Structures are given as structure tokens and as C-alpha cells.
Length: 120
Image (cartoon, rainbow, N blue to C red; front, side):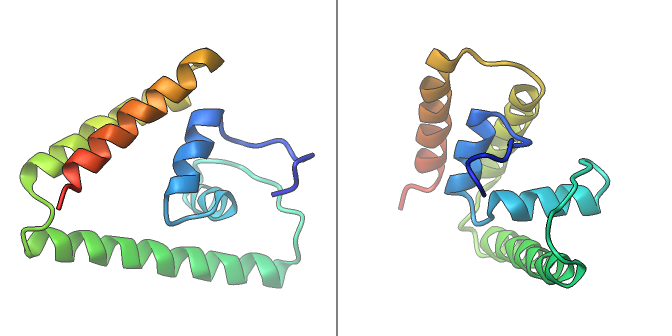
């Protein structure tokens, strides 16, 4: 994403996206396709729909991975609870302003909880 472009996400959401399997553009495309965010993309229609397809395939792969990990006992009910609670917090964070000096602390807590859930 061009540094001059304005992001549709706050700093915390952008940091989480960087740690995810998706790019910021792919998240914007998924949100746009689900009518959750209206984004004006400055790319050709062909490039846009190619990225829509890539984003959809990644999302499908993510869902299959969750089902597989849950079915094999890798993702446990407690892990799902942690994911649900963190998701609720992300929803709140997405709709509010966080003081810049608190952003690293929030990311640190999220990272610690995710790493604990993924402990192998």
C-alpha cells in the first residue's frame, strides 16, 4: 500500500493484519465484498476481480484449516474461547480511538494470548 494512501484501519488493526495471512488490500476486498466497507480501488477491473478470487481462496483455506485443526484436536475449545474474546475486543478497538502510547501494550497482550494458545 502506498504510504501516501490513507488507510481504512487504525494502527492496531494494521499491526494485526501484518501478522495475519492476509494483506491490507485483501482485507479491504473481503470487507468490500461483504458490504462492510466501501472502498474505491484504483486498479483495473481485471486486477480487482483477480484479487477478489485470491482473497476468497485464502479465506476458504483459512476456514478449512480451522475445521481441520479443531477436528484433530489442535485447536481446543479453550483456544476457540480465547479467539472469540479477542475478536470481540478487536471489534471494540476497531470502532474506538486508542491512545498511541497504548497501542504497543494492546498488541503485546494480544500476541501473548495467541502465543499461549499456540504453545506446542
